[in-house]
Amino acid sequence: MKIPFVDLKTQYKTLKPEIDKAISNVLENTAFIGGENVTNFEQNFAKQYGVKSCISVANGTDAIYISLKMLGVGSGDEVITVANSWISTSETITQAGAKPVFVDVDEFFTIDVTKIEQKITSKTKAIIPVHLYGQPAEIGKIKQICDKHNLFLIEDCAQAHFAEYKGKFVGTFGDVATFSFYPGKNLGAYGDAGCIITDNDNLAKKSRMFARHGALKKHHHQIEGINSRLDGLQAAILNVKLPYILEWNKKRLENALYYNKLLKDVGQIETPKIREDVKHIFHLYVIKTKKREELQAFLKENGVQTAIHYPVPLPFMEAYKYLNCSENDFPSVAENKDRILSLPMFPELKKSEMEYVVDLIKKFFDE
Image 1 (cartoon, rainbow, N blue to C red):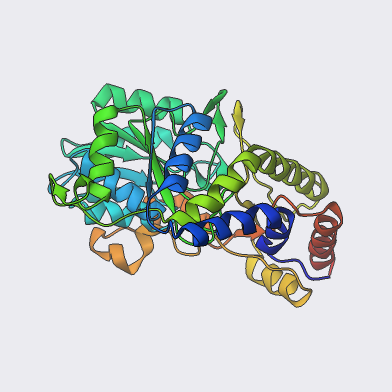
Image 2: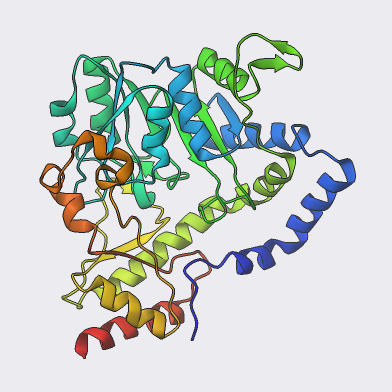
């Protein structure tokens, strides 16, 4: 049996008539940049999220960069974020002119709130928690810290579309939230795509302007900006997929709980913990094992694709060598980096496929 890490083809086949029609309409109307599809997606996403504004952009990286710039983060500032994430979270801080300050993770792979305040200085301007793997960070406590120290809160929701913290969607706690619709995400386009959401009208207006060369009306540039637009084709595809996202998230959680059940007696495996009072949407299902490399190779030999998110934590990358970080500064991510392994996870994953994966894992450890 061959099991892919993510199966985007099956999802497409399920929605083929709707997807094909949406793409055909874009081609027929040559609505490639801007237009009705983009406007509709922004309105639909904002409505489903319960926020005032959704600003579509070219990708999730731009979403973070634009948010930082429009909040006034720049030279001489520091921004606190988590030590384990994709580099988009931290490189955008540097691109805005500020300095990234990393914090270790907790047992849920999210930023350790007990270690945030010791990193705050007079230069700290904002905190960017990441709801990693689909697990909400301790966002209520992070919001309290931001309020206490008068800091901006930017939620990185790239992997957590419609995940919930105490009955409220992540992304609705901060000044602004950012999303990626990269194809492999829970809500994925067929190319790069992203958005920003906020209830701040002024911030929404500035973000939209900055993302469109500094103009809300063509040829009327009030400021200098960048070119970061969601194209019509991706918007049309996202409009088709959006009504299904909550059901897909529910199925992912069901799959994760089934994995947990099957793996509960495998002593050499640590299954992902779920924080109390949250709805984890399992963008990724990440286990921990001391025999990660060997297990990954064994699964590959038997047709099972896996991945590592992420093999090198941000503070240990060459790009951040100038910060002089050591593994002693981030003991949890240092320990996790050689143990984490992401198993196949997508809504269409069958129980028989998960059983096959787990049978292989048990066979590996038995031998």
